[in-house]
Amino acid sequence: MYFVDVDDIVAEKIVVSKESLRGTHFRRAGPRQKVYFESDEVHACIVTCGGLCPGLNTMIREIVCGLYHMYGVTGVLGIEVRRIKRFLCSKHNPLTPKVINDIHKRGGTIFETSRGGHDTSKIVDSIQDRGINQEIRRPGLKVAVVGIPKTIDNDIPVIDKPFGFDTAVEEAQRAISAAHVESESTENGIGVVKQMGRHSGFIAMYATLASRDVDCCLIPESPFYLEGPGGLFEYIEKRLNENGHMVIVVAEGAGQELLSGNTCTMDNIDASGNKQLQDVGFWISQKIKDHFSKKQKLTINLKYIDPTYMICAVPSNASDNVYCTLLAHSAIHGAMAGYTGFTVGPVNGKHSCIPFQRITERQNKVVITDRMWARCLSSTNQPSFFSPKQLFAKIGDEKHGDNHVEDLAIK
Image (cartoon, rainbow, N blue to C red; front, side, top):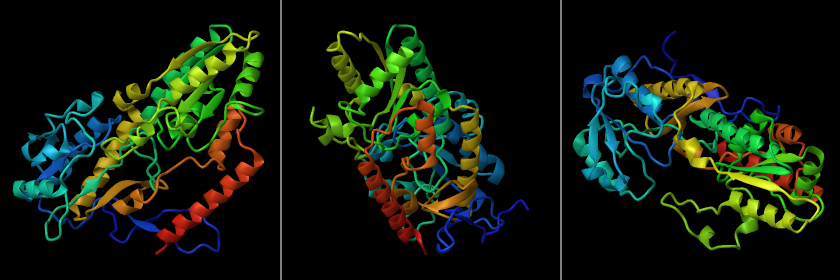
């Protein structure tokens, strides 16, 4: 019972209507009885890409140790580059369990990381010349490519969550706690905390639910407005009159449509092709200060906290350390079985091998008509900032989007 049956599959959706078709299933991850690669012929390569995330070093350690101890693979290299496009002349570090023994105690990555700017064809040629067979794919090459989901934003679809998310939520709470202490220690104190979340507000929402000290949570998926009846300013004044202090958590992608006309930075993109967002935390802090400076009867004391890159740089916590081990083992088993072009992760609690195209065709976002967002609103007691007309339109859009995605996924 140690090996996984090659015919085992995992359903993407476990709660469906009785009229639904069979839907999408993925191969279950785990060790196969038949191994495609010979251990003594394997040359594995590890590279870290994109921004920092808690658990990167843990993942590197578990891949190296897993290859060594489970399959006897000793040819493991780490790519240390400032830019992936310099792969041809970059430094390659031979990795052994002894070399990476305690790197999981450190944040960041021992290989450095970068965004974009690479020449794929030259990298493939270099990999072929070096005999690396577990890094990239080209027709006719015995090369397995495996990606492990890395983003603290939790915006990868299909899988339950990526590694680093639990640590990010835990660290986000520290900033919220500091803002709470600052706000309740002064008269009419307001603590504003900006959290990571370019297009998805999962960190802000889960940190809000976990802390119980937040009075208002603003995320990209839920539009809000500042002035007028039912607006943010009115709610802030009401909360201050009731409690004498409040904490606002805002995801970095929230409210960008409100400040997009202020500067031209929205037209700029980074090396990964993402639009460079404006600092909504600083902007909303200034707007709140300006608004209440006009009210002589209510003087506020506002403190703005931005912990975003502190969260990215910390080591992974116990939960993510265990999770990194599971993901690393699933990736190793899949690569040694000869699979390629896939990522790994739990789907409804069962670890699976998922084709790359399934996780890039859309982004995972907070569904504001779902129960989890309703729980968040119940925790903060904030208004939805939606008019009934906007809410019904949002429900219609989300239903249409879900059906469209399901139509694409059905086999």
